Length: 237
Image (cartoon, rainbow, N blue to C red; front, side, top):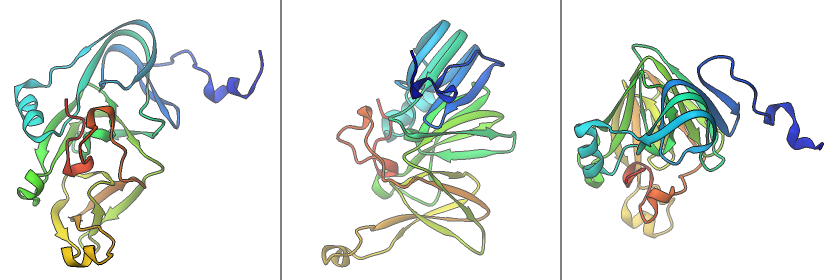
């Protein structure tokens, strides 16, 4: 049989080494030789001797997820084989974290990661108890993290001279060393009279970067009925 679907970039290739790589822009391939961690429901295919199970996140993160609604419902993939991860045909990207790196990221944008990375749920500094508190997932340590973006992301450098304000529903993640505050851009009266409706933004200052997707995010199945983004339940469950 012949056809464009059999182009080389679409064909699964034999593994060359353990770890994650891009199958293409919409999927991450993870060659497992031991363990990999991923968001529950992100697996689209696998082959080999692999076992999937719900991953315990420890009592601390379990309680934080229950209280905040933020976090990632995780699964562990153990054994030897290959597994492919994807999320609603979103664009996939792989980040290499070094020992001194730390990334604050929205739980809905996490796809899979190496078990060598540390994961915690933390309150966004400077947000106070606005909207019941803003919480995000923070990854640190050394290893690889695959994230998704609904469309091609915008990576904006942040410097002391040039702080950046972002829509709380469109932000994917940022350097965790950045200072964060919530800013109100319009009065309610202005919004009711036909303003932009972007009432609150996340302001980031310091030295680092912020990743924004060109979308305010579609609810995942776990998010049905929630507001999404940083202001609602993100991958709760």
